Image (cartoon, rainbow, N blue to C red):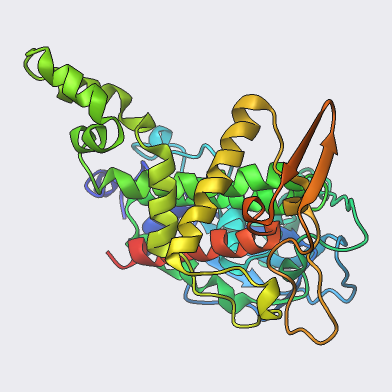
Length: 384
């Protein structure tokens, strides 16, 4: 395959992971092969050697396992087909790091585990040692997990996870460039939220909301024209603009402010459209979250309000929503919401009371909703 033929495909505008896979499918030659450790404190079972284009996920079978013990539990072997002198290489969008970092973020969302890519450990080059060359110049420190409590805030993301969870990645080439960029951004936010959840759960709340908002923004872009969003979100402004009699003024204003229109509605509509069903294993009914769409809508309104207060007013999420979940010995699963009577929260120079209606769920429940919603959206954009 010569360089001139690359121009007709016009693919060098998506993320590294996407463009590299496309070139592999078109028969581009392999420049080199890299191996990267994928670091996690979960136990990963199985491995993948085919079906994912130029990428393989190999299992080194680490022996030790416990929450917080970060070690290589997978190795990514990536065949690199991209060359810097290819036409359009400079247009590759990679605002979330390198190929291995993009794949680690996608894999983190797909499997529901803390996962990050380490530095390259081995390189295979043409006409060199067929067993590869060990690499020591790309050493990166293992990320740390700080626990603020003896009990886990997100207990479901540790323990055993199968590589079968990576199946959504197999369909990346079915996704448009715009959607894959948004998906990687959402995955990165979800990934970072997992890593800080145990030490900074209030910040983790913000990042989970932002992950959903990233998907919602991309989804809504194709749903309504800017002028329709203006009519729905700001009807008074729309009518004032119409009354001016200035031709095309409403349309031009709508285009200018379209990104900020109806952010709460976009967020809620996205969750309601793609939300997962209730978990298969649940605690006693009185410790469950009501997964009816009516109640979830109310919960998301409250959560988005807390997120806005946290970002713009420095008011953290309510402390009860940041606590570890409780699990009785006879229950199949952890509690999904804060338990007990209304809670008085003391912090800094203010005291606030929260009723049980105002603390609708725990962070681990919202993580379940966030991941399930993004995975369902991922499946939808993969099938178009």
